[in-house]
Image (cartoon, rainbow, N blue to C red; front, side, top):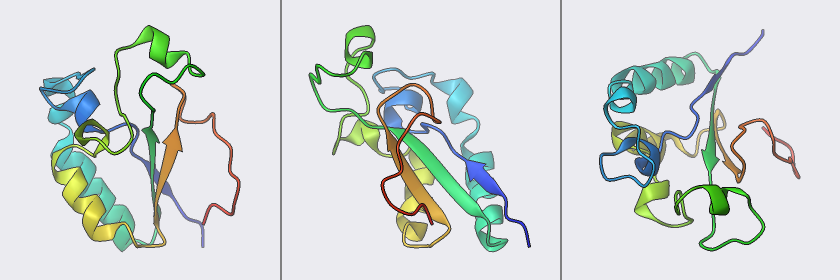
Length: 119
């Protein structure tokens, strides 16, 4: 049986909330219910929900993003938490083997290193 994966990329307070550091605001906010609905659907089907999410450390001299953008998605901050209903969904489902957050420090969601088995 083949599996599908839903990618929910960078849907955090800093990118979506009105008060986020790099917010797209309403265009991202109107997707909230559909994203959570799809996440529930994939979970019920036994498919994967993968959340590649920007993660930065304040004043990190080793990332280009710290020179291009204001501080955003800083570790252990409100801005790095998932936006709205997705945060609630994640807290409820984070222990599922089908749910995986991938911390990334680059713009691309596909530029990261896996140091241990993915699932």
